[in-house]
Length: 256
Image 1 (spheres, rainbow, N blue to C red):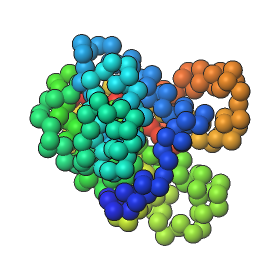
Image 2: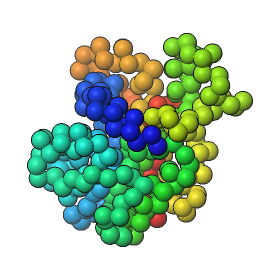
Image 3: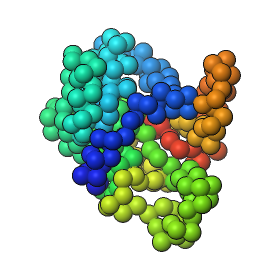
């Protein structure tokens, strides 16, 4: 992970603004829908938001009355959370080292941003191993990944950068991220390898935004009625396997 450049990037990037657009809301609302479905099984659950960013998820669940703590790498982002709600417990830290937390401390671990930015398989396994360690016996880990085919189709072919990027693409059209990159991209085989490496069990895997990212302009221009209809459509198809590889984000739900 290029920690220095990542911090510089998020000191400038407005993540809240992205998630407040209609197309960004699809990703957020899909995650919320599934997290809330599983939260019902717990009595007063404790949630850890690893890579909390500026607190979109932490603030949502805190305002719903849940016991949530936020861990974030970027000091600027932590200050934004604290300015929005000083009562949320925040931690400055890295997803691959959760040593400030005891074993089996949380019912739910959210691991969204980190798996985009951890480049090597070894780093990803460390993050998952730490999430598993702090998870209670019957707990769940929610993980969001950036998908290879989405990046290849949009940035490579649609936006015309494919010929400039060929040195970073293998013969199977897998994007090869290096240590200086800010993002890494995966396929289902990669996600399954990480899951199996730690003997985690899959509860469900979801196309978090489905076709949304291919329709950004059209979705952002929708009136509220049409957007709500699109959401209904998206929720009806987001568990279909054929969407997983070509989505921008996939949401994997795992347990010990």
